[in-house]
Amino acid sequence: MSTPTRVLIIDDHPLFRRGVSQLLALSSGFTVIGEAASGAEGIAEAKTLDPDLILLDLNMKGMNGIETLRTMRDMEIEARIILLTVSNAPDDLIAAIRAGADGYILKDNDPDDILRLIDSAMHGQTAISPELTSLLASALREESVVENRSHASLTERETAILKCLAAGMSNKLIARELDIMESTVKVHIRNLLKKLKVRSRVEAAVWAVANQLN
Image (cartoon, rainbow, N blue to C red):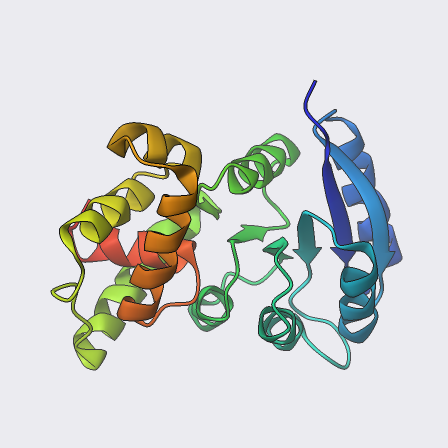
């Protein structure tokens, strides 16, 4: 039996934190190990608890979700971080992905869909509310034209891995597909993120789709 994913919830609404905890309790795949009511408190808890997954609210008093996310990524907190928010604003979505979010889920999604998306993120796949995917792809396509970002500098292997990311494949599946070690996949992903000037595999995947590399 696999070990449950250890989850930290950061949200300034106690009632919502309780609701998310109850939702995750419905699945044997998750266990909530901590809660925080602010970005600063959440960062401290993340350092202490070392969770596998952080569910982070966007609109909080004081340090907002994007600022919290950037700080945690700068501190090299390795947990998967998913924004769980009411905002479907394109600017918020782009900012979250560019800051290194592993997913962006709307709070008003069906509970079963929220669980499914969270689970997909833990398997290395894209965790974005379906209604936002085309919006994100469109925004990143426009952004790549403006910045003139190119995949020409990627090696053949990196391009193959990027296409796998666009298909929503986990590192384990990519390794199996390309007949290489999973640790090698991680190295290639780190290199291609740097070359594309993106901060997360989610952004890389959506960028690939937007630029028709899938």
